[in-house]
Length: 143
Image (tube, rainbow, N blue to C red):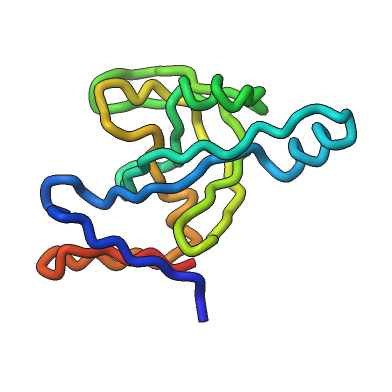
């Protein structure tokens, strides 16, 4: 059986498909820090919105700084409100409900004016099945 979780917000129509998850450093970075005897930053719990319109998963710039992530590259993106925004690319671990963990590249992007610190994009959704049942006020994500 595939790892699965279901969220039933009080008002899915108003909030959208938002889920609490934790974001942490990649296993590769964790191994490197352990070898160097350095502290491992704990994962940070955030609100994330599932966004089928986003090609790539994004985390807030602030979160990338808090986790002390070093970019592994740079990618230019366009958003509804801006064009040609350069974003750092980071490799992180996403910890979904029900102990579902997934490593992925994410962008550090300006997610200003929103009550979320992460957008789950199609690069993560490509490994899952999303079922959105509006009339039941719930969504389910299976990996």
